[in-house]
Length: 259
Image (cartoon, rainbow, N blue to C red; front, side, top):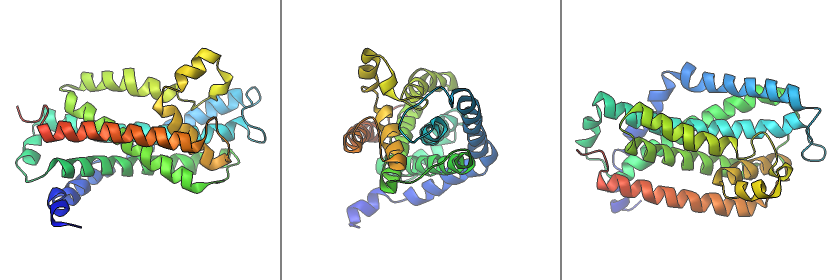
């Protein structure tokens, strides 16, 4: 690593460890609770719709549902980690200790988004562990599973960073999550295939980048999907680059941090 890159990332490891410990010390709330929520979704929707919904040949509805629930949990918890950490630091006033430290905007980005990815993957692995016994799953193309899990967690961790920078109160953060993140997550094909929707709603769904994350992730399990995984990778990768550029710009300018 060059001297310039090293100086940019100086302190990132320490801040990353601090952020990981922050959620891990309350893992009953940050990990166990989301896993239980996903299990309840599976039990309710799987029981009610198992004999009424057919998506792919040779794939039961419960099997179809599990990867969607795993990815939904990854996305929501990656967002929650970075956004909640920043808003708590703002409100409690301990953000000043980070501001006086010699941390570059790159170090902030790597630490906060990196910790969000860890939390998202930990929760996702927990959801997969407790739900896999209810369905027949196979890893047809595991590299797609890993690629979309990492990209999805990274993108939502970055969005959480942006939301945490923008919000000044918990209710503003809640509005961002309830009116943007939650609808985009639930309307992304977690519980259904977009091919089951009327034509106009299929087109609307294809404007949602969350759809491509979940569809590509699901492709890794079954080898089939609503769109090509390469198309999904291009959309998700481009979306991540865009939101990362915005987050880095906000961090570099000290947006709502230094006032």
